[in-house]
Image 1 (cartoon, protein in one colour):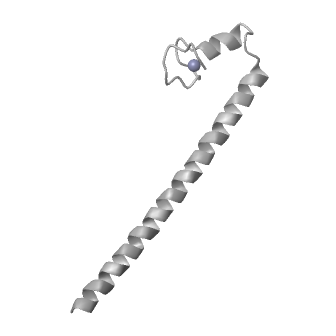
Image 2: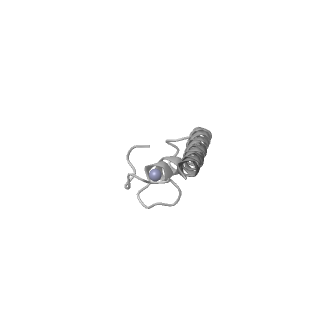
Image 3: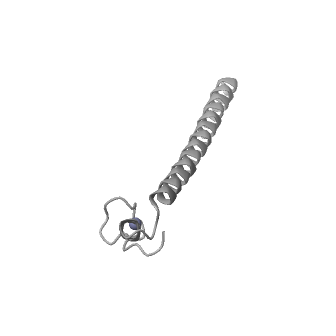
Amino acid sequence: MQGCKFRDCSHNAEPGCRVKEALENGELSIERWENYIKLKREASFAEAKENINIRLKEKLRNKSIAKFQKQFQKGRR
Ligand SMILES: [Zn+2]
């Protein structure tokens, strides 16, 4: 939402929040606002899921690298 005092405004209780103001004077309907929050939450949830997948893949890769190194060292002896 544009017009908030702070760029990282979470639109909860920040001073100078444009959303709060718009909700108070009826510029923004509560239904529309709740819809926006819902969409935002779903987006961040999807993002978090993606991050977990990336982390898991990295973990697996590190594991197989460690395994390979172990085998490599064994073979050298
Ligand atoms: Zn805000």
